Length: 214
Image (cartoon, rainbow, N blue to C red; front, side, top):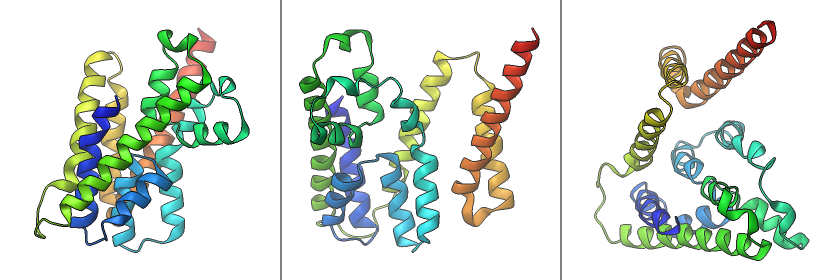
């Protein structure tokens, strides 16, 4: 899992320098923010000098799933206030998937913490290496900003194949994106997140009522 973060970190580091930022920003972002997909979005927000309110709201919408991760993440096994603080900070999608599986039920707090630390190092190290490499490349290299889009496109297709009965979710996401593109093209990402979240909540309420009546 950690090795899988390296090529994505390299792409992120390259994108940082090709976007006109100093190479060390890749290290700062990946070390202090450590939010994966939001870090890719943050590059565009920083370059566009987006308002802090837009940055904060985007961060909340992108990472709100972590609130639900905390409900079943085995944080109680991690001992010490400092260790728990870091474990909470380093709770990524990959860490959650590994530590909440059947095989991880016997893992100690030290093993969980060590796993999170090494994945953090893989991500930050890959990004730093990519940024240093990018500083040596000529400007104008295209396609790097599509790395995250390509990654999530592949993940979405895999999820769709695994859950063929859940067709309404990707359809709802597509409709939210199209509506945001037509209504608020300047704030498409933020508007699409809001519409998609509202759609999911409405579907949840509607499904719950049908189940209750049944």
